[in-house]
Length: 84
Image 1 (cartoon, rainbow, N blue to C red):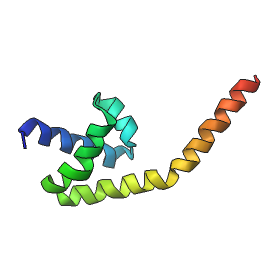
Image 2: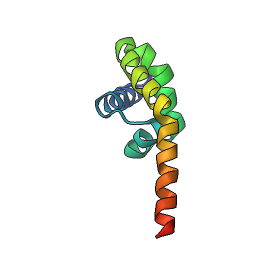
Image 3: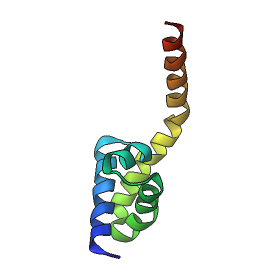
Image 4: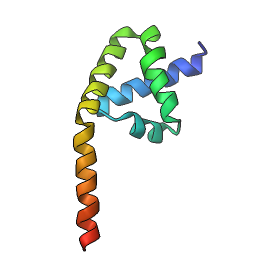
């Protein structure tokens, strides 16, 4: 694996662990695609740093568990602003 890819993978992983960010927000922050972030943190990170990969997995699992709540809140906000 190229050095710049390893650096990017570790940088993405640290950002997710420190901020609890989603794949989508991480992709926007680092200006890469969601697919790239997902591949980096689910496949490449495990080869580079399994311990960090486990931490990232916890954050992503938590985000996945809360996903339906965030969607409901976004819909609620949409309709609250629409009434005004």
